[in-house]
Length: 401
Image (cartoon, rainbow, N blue to C red; front, side, top):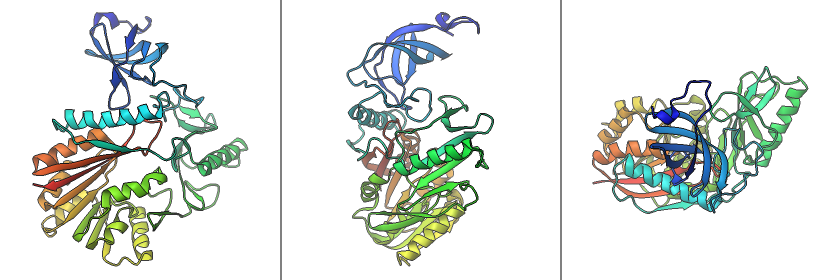
């Protein structure tokens, strides 16, 4: 450990004055001082700040801002009173233009550093129509001892009691207020400590259910397709960007056979079924699979089928039988895909691949394997599905070489 930070537990933590150089993957600011590389949370590029070193690992230190000595030109005052304590948003200190620029840089950094792509393609980012009040899905935390409802505090599992959340769509904000009122009156005690909420066009679905009602179904019409889902089935958070996302992933693509891995309730399966003779969607969640089948049936798309299975298991059993796949789309969770999934995709050898990712680092990790397996990266596009946070949705398109 660097001698400047070799402190016993009850000694004061080391502070330094540093300049933030840029934003790194994970949303932290990069700085250097006293032979340490510092990762500074809630910083802005160009800030001159006094930081407190919270933790050291070799030559790497994790730090937090104590004082902004000279603010960056792209620093703004965060409007949320919970900012810095609530673990949800970490980019409210940046102008929206700076947020978009940082996200493109994060994707480019991951492609270069992790996937070893020397010259990544140009990355266009699609801005969110709404920078605030866009989030149609939320995961709230309930503390039964303290009767708190909100989000986890930054870096902990303590619940930050939140009365108002600036990124929620109005319907979810109203639901949050109603839940808080019920909890305050002891007329509603959630069955779980985490509560899933999603807003549809006509109502809000909760899991566990509100009071004695069931977790109800809701709908959204996206790109002329109607989707049924509920709080127990994943659906994208920022509905205002979904038309553009679907166009990027499936627009003007057609052929004989398409595979949709991690298909959820069929967000991409339905448009794929309008461009391909045969479509197979694979989804591990039985609830999401049920909704996907219903959505296909209601759309009268009989050329698509949904298989409830772990993606790796399905690929292991079917990669050889599907030997003439024109297009394969995958939209995995934040953790990316297992090694056996990449192996199954390479064994299937689809002509084209579209990888939709909410984590540039795991995307780059998986792209490295696909590129080594004989694919070329054709294009990369970004979608700001999560304004006020460092998270970004990325669409990478590949073709067989």
